[in-house]
Length: 217
Ligand code: SF4
Image 1 (cartoon, rainbow, N blue to C red):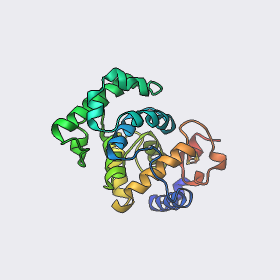
Image 2: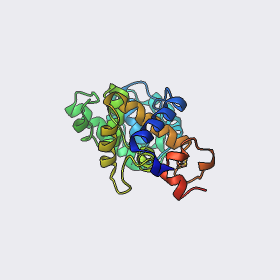
Image 3: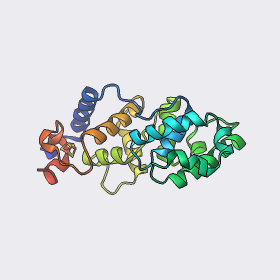
Image 4: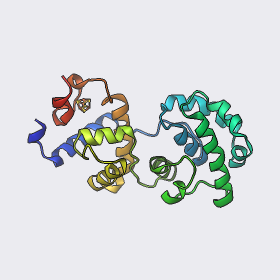
């Protein structure tokens, strides 16, 4: 069936499905300002958002400003995020990041991709999430879910890097839809189109998904 449908039709069907099932999706991390957003996104690398939210509920009640994080020892920060993977590296990065924000950005979270990517522990995906969620600047942050969905629907090639996937998605979807489609793809990947579990028999998009015919039963 997938071969009979044009790429344009597939994109339309995917968009309609996501709009119907995920009309108002947002970032699932808890935060109350851009510093907390930045820290929460940094902590979410290889961790589920619900675990990050549990850790940050305490962390954010102890530390409020960049100075608080810069003044704390990495070990102190560690003690609040021990339940999260890579917590040692993440606590060191948070402390260094806070110091860099103080030294070079007047203690503020910058709103440019290249500036955000200079911060310790902040890669392109994290920077794009902060721009999109914190500053309402249209971006498509490519995490594992977005990459998987893009490839399952032939919006990118299997061998494409996250950066190549990002560039292709930005060409396919109009700029005004970038942030929304990013969240919709994350939710679809997180709750329906899972990495391993087969659920093609109940999936409303199986007819346009190459994985259903190849992998699923
Ligand atoms: S059939 Fe499976 S792999 Fe394809 S879109 Fe549905 S859940 Fe995802």
